[in-house]
Figure (tube, one colour):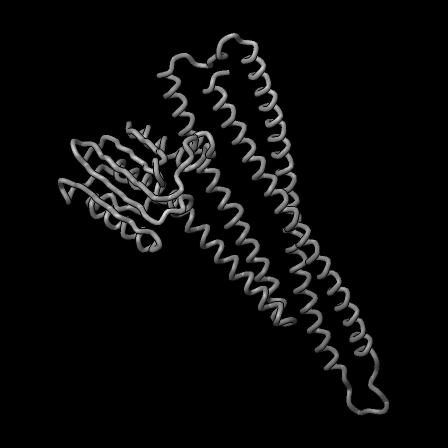
Length: 374
């Protein structure tokens, strides 16, 4: 098996394993939530039983006749207490029904996850079997193995096309997962907790305060998720502004957000009022966001040097840091859906060049260029 075929198979194998790990984590998370909800439902059943017994006692008292030793009847008071208990029972029944409905929905989701996990396990077994078969064929071949595609020009375009489609599909799936697990479930959980809160406000203030904190935490998580989705769906750059102004604003925002970094910039533009076609300006900032974010998350650096110039209808940029440096084999070691893979595909679509290398002494240098139109 040639290196290209082996690399493709490893990418598929890694992607399948990542999806399998994701669904396994989701399965365990749902299972834990179901157990927690069942515990809450059981506690409510106990409370309902206690309230029903208490109600029976009041009913017995109110059913008795006035005491011959007292001219004052307590029937009205007993009826009032019984009504309070009835209200508490009704509130608990509503909460119990909501819990049971949530349990049914989660158990249905659990069954779906089981099927997906089973399919992914079968796929993983098939991939492993295919890998062994390739290895056997390669060992039996006197030369280096065999190639799937001999026309490197067409195969290069096809591979990039597949990569772009896969990255777009992953991005859509990622966003829908955030909406499903972080926002939709957050809304359902908050709705449930509000119902519990309405009951606890009349019965247990201390628990009501804890429930209120849970609601506030859920709302914060949903807001964070909404911001993440908004950030991925919108570029937040005004393509109508001069590029120089956008770049200066962008660098300033990074300095404000990361004061622990020294960020030096040198931007060379012949026309300070120049605006680029939105395709180029939007993707320029997507690339910058990818590379700066990668430095902030992984480099352990404290200094960044950014250079950009536009000349002869070509945009040249470089970003260097003084961090730990990047793995020279990052293309194969990082997940296929990583931002660095996305950067490579953006550069390909822009008909440009990209190089990411570890410096001899310390840090990483990113260089990219692509032709532009105005």
